[in-house]
Structures are given as structure tokens and as C-alpha cells.
Amino acid sequence: MKDRSTDVIERRLEGSWLPVAAFVSDRELPVDELRVARLTLHDGRYEILDRSGAVVDSGGYVIDAAVSPPVMDMVGVEGPYAGRKLEAIIELDGDALTVCYDLDGIARPESMEPDEDQLLLRIAYERDLRQLS
Image (cartoon, rainbow, N blue to C red):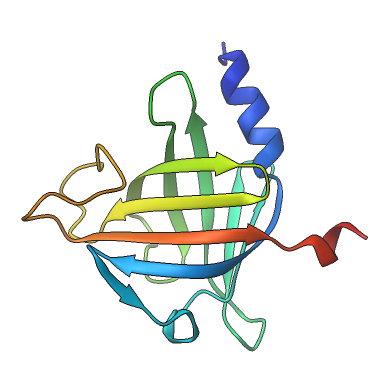
């Protein structure tokens, strides 16, 4: 049975998210250089769209908010992560979402701040409020 906090976060994650900042470890990446121009989350499925609106990655995701920080496991079905599982941590604060995972795929990050030898990708998103009107 799903934890109540997980159910609440899953409902709050539903929608379309636009990247506003990105970091590899502590080095900032220009948002316009990211492959992701939009992340959509709906009913346990995710899609990553590029700037042309084409779906470049998709699959399923599960959330566990009973742990701290909450975790998101994304399993790719189509795209570069097809057949792979990304173990991420997330922060959700109103209309702001941050997703962080280890680019090497070695282990789930324990925090949003990388250890010396970790290659973490951290992307901050804001909810696309235009999708709500």
C-alpha cells in the first residue's frame, strides 16, 4: 500500500515542467543547452520534449516520499535511457521541482550536493502555468 505522503506528492507532480537551471556537480549548465525543454509527468509516466516539441525520452516513474529526501525512479521505455533505471532524489516546493541523479548511474544521490567524486545532474524546473489555464 502506498504511503499517504507519496500519494500527495504524486498528485502535486502531475503536469508540465520547464527547466530553469541545471548543474553537473557544481558547474552550472546553460538551460538552452539541455536536451530537455519540457518534462511532463502524468499518471506514473514521464516524457521529455526537446525545443521542437518532439518526445526524445519517455517511460514510467514511481515516487517514494516515505523516505527523506523523496525518491523518484524513472525507467526509460523510449530514447537514450530505454531499458535503464535512473534513481533520482527530488525536492518539490510549490511550483518548483528539482530532480537530481548520478550521471554515472552508480548510486542514488544522498543529497542535492555532490560528493567530491560524484557526477550529479541537478535540474531545477518550474511548473508551466500556461498548461493550467
